[in-house]
Image (cartoon, rainbow, N blue to C red; front, side, top):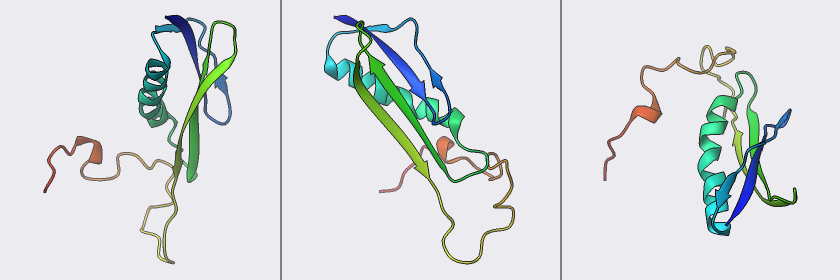
Length: 107
C-alpha cells in the first residue's frame, strides 16, 4: 500500500493535493480518480461557454505522475434556432425538474 496524491486541473488552475490517501493497488487508484471526477466537474461546469475539461492527476510518493483521468463536457446547439434564454450566463436551475433528481426509469 502506498500514499498517492490526487491533484485537480480545470484548464486554468492546478490544485495540488498535499495530504494524499493510501491506496492498496492500481485498481484502487483508478477507482478513486474516476469516482471523484463527476463531483469535481459539477462545480466546474461553465456558466458561459460550451466546453470544460477537468483532470485528476495522480502522483506517487516520489512525485511521479502515475495516472490521469479527464472528464470533458462539450455542448453545442443544433440547428439555427436557439431556444429563448439559451444565451443566459446562468444555465443552472432554469428547468422545472432536474435530471439529477429523476430516479425512475422505464424499461
